[in-house]
Image (tube, rainbow, N blue to C red; front, side, top):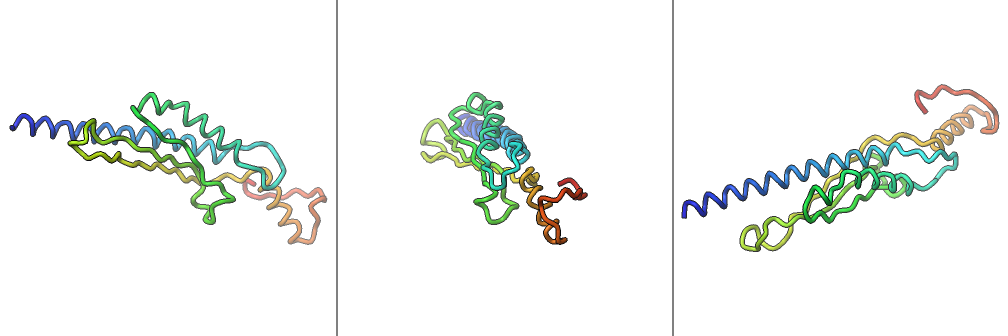
Length: 157
Protein backbone atom coordinates (compact mmCIF):
# COMPACT_ATOMS: atom_id res chain seq x y z
CA UNK A 1 0.00 0.00 0.00
CA UNK A 2 2.85 2.39 0.84
CA UNK A 3 4.57 1.56 -2.46
CA UNK A 4 1.42 2.39 -4.47
CA UNK A 5 0.91 5.65 -2.58
CA UNK A 6 4.59 6.64 -3.00
CA UNK A 7 4.58 5.74 -6.69
CA UNK A 8 1.40 7.77 -7.24
CA UNK A 9 2.88 10.73 -5.39
CA UNK A 10 6.05 10.58 -7.49
CA UNK A 11 3.99 10.29 -10.68
CA UNK A 12 1.90 13.31 -9.69
CA UNK A 13 4.97 15.52 -9.10
CA UNK A 14 6.58 14.24 -12.31
CA UNK A 15 3.49 15.15 -14.35
CA UNK A 16 3.25 18.60 -12.76
CA UNK A 17 6.96 19.22 -13.49
CA UNK A 18 6.59 18.14 -17.13
CA UNK A 19 3.51 20.34 -17.59
CA UNK A 20 5.27 23.34 -16.02
CA UNK A 21 8.29 22.84 -18.27
CA UNK A 22 6.02 22.54 -21.31
CA UNK A 23 4.23 25.72 -20.27
CA UNK A 24 7.51 27.64 -20.00
CA UNK A 25 8.55 26.31 -23.42
CA UNK A 26 5.30 27.38 -25.09
CA UNK A 27 5.41 30.74 -23.35
CA UNK A 28 8.92 31.40 -24.68
CA UNK A 29 7.90 30.41 -28.23
CA UNK A 30 4.83 32.65 -27.90
CA UNK A 31 7.00 35.53 -26.65
CA UNK A 32 9.31 35.24 -29.65
CA UNK A 33 6.31 35.07 -32.01
CA UNK A 34 4.80 38.13 -30.32
CA UNK A 35 8.03 40.08 -30.84
CA UNK A 36 7.90 39.17 -34.51
CA UNK A 37 4.23 40.12 -34.79
CA UNK A 38 4.67 43.49 -33.11
CA UNK A 39 7.78 44.57 -35.01
CA UNK A 40 6.89 43.25 -38.47
CA UNK A 41 6.91 45.98 -41.10
CA UNK A 42 5.45 45.35 -44.54
CA UNK A 43 7.08 48.53 -45.92
CA UNK A 44 3.91 50.28 -46.97
CA UNK A 45 2.78 53.84 -46.51
CA UNK A 46 -0.87 52.89 -46.85
CA UNK A 47 -2.75 53.43 -43.58
CA UNK A 48 -4.98 50.63 -42.39
CA UNK A 49 -2.91 47.92 -44.05
CA UNK A 50 -3.65 44.46 -42.77
CA UNK A 51 -1.61 42.74 -40.07
CA UNK A 52 -2.09 39.34 -41.72
CA UNK A 53 1.50 39.22 -43.07
CA UNK A 54 2.73 39.90 -39.52
CA UNK A 55 0.62 37.04 -38.15
CA UNK A 56 1.88 34.68 -40.86
CA UNK A 57 5.47 35.56 -39.97
CA UNK A 58 4.73 35.19 -36.23
CA UNK A 59 3.25 31.73 -36.83
CA UNK A 60 6.36 30.78 -38.80
CA UNK A 61 8.54 31.83 -35.85
CA UNK A 62 6.28 29.98 -33.38
CA UNK A 63 6.34 26.81 -35.50
CA UNK A 64 10.13 27.01 -35.77
CA UNK A 65 10.26 26.04 -32.09
CA UNK A 66 8.45 22.81 -33.03
CA UNK A 67 5.92 22.62 -30.19
CA UNK A 68 4.32 19.48 -31.66
CA UNK A 69 7.67 17.69 -31.45
CA UNK A 70 8.62 18.93 -27.99
CA UNK A 71 5.19 18.46 -26.35
CA UNK A 72 3.26 15.26 -26.85
CA UNK A 73 -0.33 15.82 -28.06
CA UNK A 74 0.14 19.58 -28.48
CA UNK A 75 -3.03 20.95 -30.08
CA UNK A 76 -2.65 24.73 -29.81
CA UNK A 77 -2.46 27.41 -32.45
CA UNK A 78 -1.05 30.91 -32.34
CA UNK A 79 -3.62 33.72 -32.52
CA UNK A 80 -3.29 37.49 -32.31
CA UNK A 81 -5.13 40.48 -30.95
CA UNK A 82 -5.15 42.77 -33.97
CA UNK A 83 -4.71 46.49 -33.15
CA UNK A 84 -7.90 47.40 -35.04
CA UNK A 85 -10.02 44.77 -33.27
CA UNK A 86 -8.96 45.50 -29.68
CA UNK A 87 -10.25 48.58 -27.89
CA UNK A 88 -7.37 48.81 -25.43
CA UNK A 89 -4.05 49.01 -27.28
CA UNK A 90 -2.27 47.47 -24.27
CA UNK A 91 -3.69 44.08 -25.24
CA UNK A 92 -2.08 43.78 -28.66
CA UNK A 93 0.05 40.70 -29.19
CA UNK A 94 -0.18 36.94 -29.57
CA UNK A 95 -1.65 34.18 -27.47
CA UNK A 96 -1.83 30.39 -27.52
CA UNK A 97 -4.58 28.20 -26.09
CA UNK A 98 -3.96 24.47 -25.77
CA UNK A 99 -4.99 21.46 -23.72
CA UNK A 100 -2.99 18.54 -22.38
CA UNK A 101 -4.47 15.46 -20.70
CA UNK A 102 -3.56 15.33 -17.03
CA UNK A 103 -3.16 11.58 -16.85
CA UNK A 104 -3.00 8.56 -19.10
CA UNK A 105 -6.06 7.06 -17.48
CA UNK A 106 -9.26 8.58 -16.15
CA UNK A 107 -8.59 7.13 -12.68
CA UNK A 108 -6.14 9.86 -11.67
CA UNK A 109 -7.05 13.44 -12.46
CA UNK A 110 -10.33 12.83 -14.23
CA UNK A 111 -11.27 12.72 -17.90
CA UNK A 112 -11.11 16.43 -18.71
CA UNK A 113 -7.82 17.77 -20.14
CA UNK A 114 -6.05 20.65 -18.46
CA UNK A 115 -6.51 23.96 -20.33
CA UNK A 116 -3.47 26.20 -20.72
CA UNK A 117 -3.30 29.77 -21.98
CA UNK A 118 -0.13 31.68 -22.85
CA UNK A 119 -0.27 35.34 -23.82
CA UNK A 120 2.37 37.88 -24.70
CA UNK A 121 1.32 41.50 -24.98
CA UNK A 122 4.28 43.75 -25.70
CA UNK A 123 4.58 47.41 -26.65
CA UNK A 124 3.80 47.78 -30.33
CA UNK A 125 6.21 49.61 -32.62
CA UNK A 126 4.49 52.13 -34.91
CA UNK A 127 4.48 51.14 -38.57
CA UNK A 128 5.62 53.42 -41.38
CA UNK A 129 2.02 54.29 -42.25
CA UNK A 130 1.22 55.13 -38.61
CA UNK A 131 4.27 57.42 -38.45
CA UNK A 132 3.21 59.08 -41.68
CA UNK A 133 -0.28 59.75 -40.29
CA UNK A 134 1.14 61.17 -37.06
CA UNK A 135 3.52 63.51 -38.89
CA UNK A 136 0.72 64.60 -41.24
CA UNK A 137 -1.55 65.34 -38.25
CA UNK A 138 1.22 67.40 -36.62
CA UNK A 139 1.72 69.36 -39.82
CA UNK A 140 -2.01 70.06 -40.15
CA UNK A 141 -2.12 71.22 -36.52
CA UNK A 142 0.60 73.77 -37.36
CA UNK A 143 -1.27 74.98 -40.45
CA UNK A 144 0.86 73.24 -43.08
CA UNK A 145 -0.29 70.65 -45.60
CA UNK A 146 0.91 67.06 -45.86
CA UNK A 147 2.22 67.55 -49.40
CA UNK A 148 4.80 70.08 -48.13
CA UNK A 149 8.30 68.77 -47.51
CA UNK A 150 9.07 69.57 -43.88
CA UNK A 151 11.45 67.72 -41.56
CA UNK A 152 10.11 66.88 -38.11
CA UNK A 153 11.99 65.40 -35.20
CA UNK A 154 9.64 62.94 -33.53
CA UNK A 155 11.66 60.90 -31.04
CA UNK A 156 11.76 57.70 -33.06
CA UNK A 157 8.70 57.92 -35.28
